[in-house]
Image (cartoon, rainbow, N blue to C red):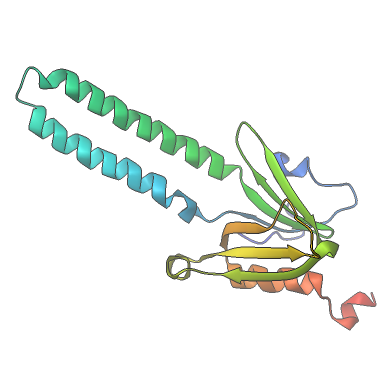
Length: 177
């Protein structure tokens, strides 16, 4: 979760979608808060499985029920590992020409919006987002439906918002270069 410096390069999972003439300006992984729900499900399932084990532990008939309960919890754990693996390959990238959001582990999805098409950009933060440090970008273009209209769980939203706005609306000094 960092802004890209000039010496850094995108991981190959992102780099393959960049054009030769594009310069990568910002690259961040989505905020780990995206994993809060799967974490809560795994811990909640563990508590329930533990309580049911204590409840059914003394009976012979409860043995089959316990096996089912722990298999269900194992499925929750596998789902959590899957979500972490998906999160690890999801990136929000801003280049000199466009914004990209790459998602998906098996089915790869790349949503893109050219910087020149962005007519309005805002961000919002929920109470939890303000406490944990993430936000959501809302992008609009001139009356068109774009593949990239919202980007959730963006880390450092104020900093990224200012960086992207500076790219969208450069000062006259920068545009003369």
